[in-house]
Image 1: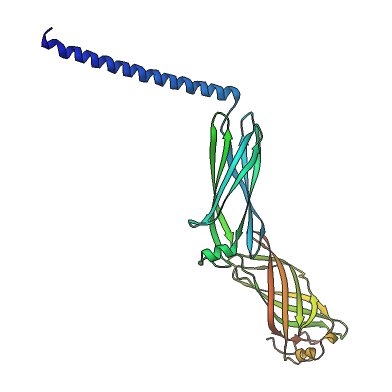
Image 2: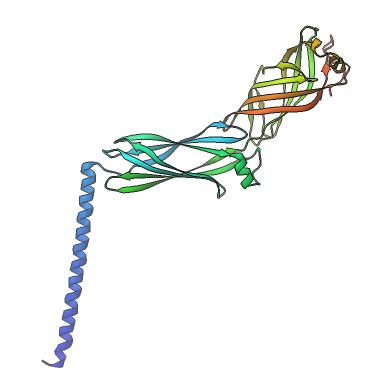
Length: 313
């Protein structure tokens, strides 16, 4: 054999190996394709598919000065012919990239075959925890939030899947309104029963409107309770605004002794108010406390011509 034949034999051998490699890769691709096709046929025949999820609603059943209770409704649809377990729910609430709250709910239930379920995720934001961690979040403000939820489900054929969800919105940090009694007007005077009008000033310290629906409070004049009063009509207090309302009330002047005469003479007397107001807000209904300690007011009688005996304070 001549030396010139050797390179030809080497080239043929390399070529054969390349051809074998191409044949093997082609065979593997065919096997993969076959398995994929079989998998699709199984899914089509048996009806297995990936579940879907979406945030249906976020509502606040309770919100006050201490906390906000949030319920997240997540709608999960299961297209499979068998129930699938909801293994875990992992959630995170953050504001401007800062964590407010996170948690894990294990063994969250089962989604029925060919059905859908609304899974409720209850979370509670404690305002003191937020304010102690982030001192730039002030009472009365509105902060943005981002909710992230990972639903981990176990599906036949597919195995464990994570369904990620995300939702953004705003949540308030409420601040209690400030209340003052500016004056009391007589409507009818009697030692046994006097009907008067309380002139109240309410200041809204929040960055959102308050729709005043009801008051639940008690008033003390000179350390003597004159009872409670009711709101006759609703009122709106704009954000960071002031509203004036008039509340009718009846009491017995003879129970006050010399304090009544001080008020009539214009000297004024101390008063206190404690109670709650029910308001509507863009975030739902709230019941907020109101209180005033050590205030001073005076009685004002109506003259027959409809004017006042003296000027308003």
